[in-house]
Image (cartoon, rainbow, N blue to C red):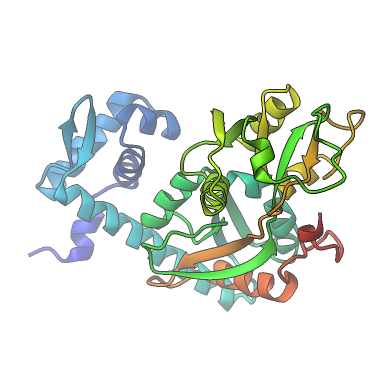
Amino acid sequence: MPTAIKRLLRTSPQQLRAFEATARLMSVTQAARELHVSQPTVSVQLRELAELVGEPLFEPLGRGIRLTSAGEALQATVADIAACWQRFEDRLGDLHGLLRGRLRIAAVTTAEYFVPDLLGPFAALHPGVEIDLAVENRDRVIARLHRQADDLAVMMLPPAELPLQSLPFLDNPLIVIAPSNHPLAHSPQPLPLSALSQERWLMREAGSGTRLVAERHFADHGFAPRIAMSLGSNEAIKHAVGAGLGLAVVSALAVAADGATSATAAEAPWVRLPVEGFPIARQWSLVWRSDAPLAAPAQRFVSYLQANAAPGALPGHGDTPLGSA
């Protein structure tokens, strides 16, 4: 009877890549596009792999597809194989006295304003580490954590349903911004939320960490905002506020990225609005699965962040706490 390694060697890397991409994207067409091959090529590789396994790997679901039980088992196995090979590469790097391997990190969209500042110095210290950074909305980052697509993730609200370890490392105050010509923009006193009951509010998409925190804050204060629009990025929110479409709750980091947290009309088309109960104090956290071993590059990055990033201060940006912005 063939050994497990002999059965594994009957498969080809192309077949496993085609399966992994199709299982992740749930689309043969998208998998072919990502792999830069034709759709029939991916279909043939999937069919041959299913024949080797002896079970169908996908089944129709409406106009799409879904994994069969055998497909789900194979998806987990392919992830295990990739993780084992990564650990082997890490050990090779250790043998040569140089940290090598790949650091896979996912970040929610707002974190794109500072994650490069975290990764840049680390990459300079460890030139043998290849870094894969995926920037997604919160729901997609959580989905990536579920399927263990990354070593680490940067987010504000880690999901409670997964076994995770968490390292808070940076303050993330949430503020209210308004058009720079808003009549209340330069109020000498903080405004009660009740004074904004007739305002139009622009919110991030459902599932966004910023939106979840804002909605909880409003509910705790008995305030029901008039939500006029939902938008999928901080840049879209800022442009919409600047165009006079309403008020919004955003991370101070998203505004600081433009060089001002309190802007006049000459500097930016929005201004930080003084509102009671704001800023809402939150923190960014680095999270990882506690039920799986971390690869050496990820372990080293966690240690690097612990040593270099106290909550409130961003490496490479001096000692000014962003929470005071």
